[in-house]
Length: 210
Length: 177
Image (cartoon, rainbow over all chains, first blue to last red; front, side, top):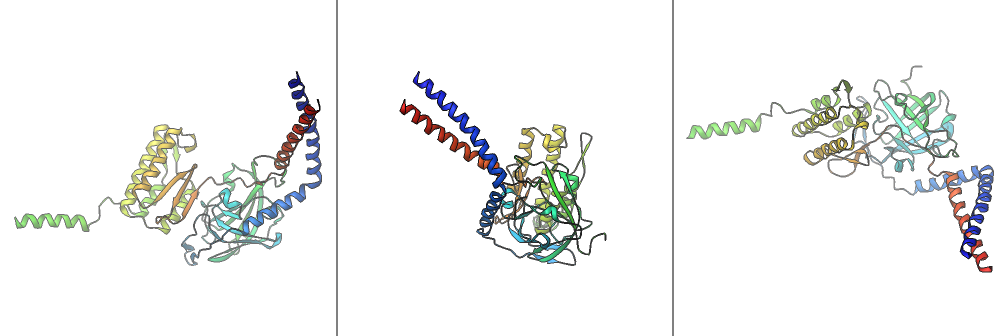
């Protein structure tokens, strides 16, 4: 009998406590979401700077647009600099989940900057990463400062696509195109897997249609 | 006797000096990899992103004729596997078929200078000297949403606190009774 009372009391207490916890969570979300996002991003920044970023030295042949000594998968080989949104992030060869924790990932199935084809870059939509990608407008400059040279791209357009829409990520070698993307919506509070991407298209300065 | 020995030596030297008529060049291997194959009425060819990665590897490293021949044979076997299971879509293949394809990759790694493996569903190509990964081939579009889901963390922590609190209250109630 005593046991039954204890179980009943426990269940009642859990139910009441859960109700108040739900209200507690709602209040934190309404008043504290932005601050928590900011501090979580600072933790990420500390983790990035603690990593040993060994750089290699590829050699770039301008005449043939060829690279000798490609960087290893997982290695940093430059920086992505976007002055308009005050962004400077390390650029890595590869875009696995572990690489994306540290900066911008370069899809291994796309061309390297300077090779004359599509370069595909991805980064998280957290503060300090590609959070401000939607602020980029036509004409804004994106610089890829690599170990073998600096390449400037001019933003041309952007769109929101489904993650399965591979036609929006064309791999070609007619023209040097930079494609940068991140998960959409960018709002951190959306729970679960995101099925859309915010995609920005830019062309190598001097190569665009303008 | 002397003529016989000389003749034999000539034949041996011929085989040593003249490369095999059927030996495949790197360029031919590239063409074979990029060719379109018909699998039960559907055209199949490797995707542009895989093509970029393979071309990059062949630019960086030389593949010998022997290795090219071996890889070419494995490509033929892979095409036969797709034909056997009646689909050009690798994603629709049964586990047995995928296992057979993985074995082909392992064979290439074991018998040529191309050190490739399949790890967690990704094709990984290591450098021939074993020092570093040359490339990993994965799906094109990645999940780049926030790793730290704020609500999940707050909810998780709150739930633990709630349970602990309820336990303490219940224990106190039981003691007072």
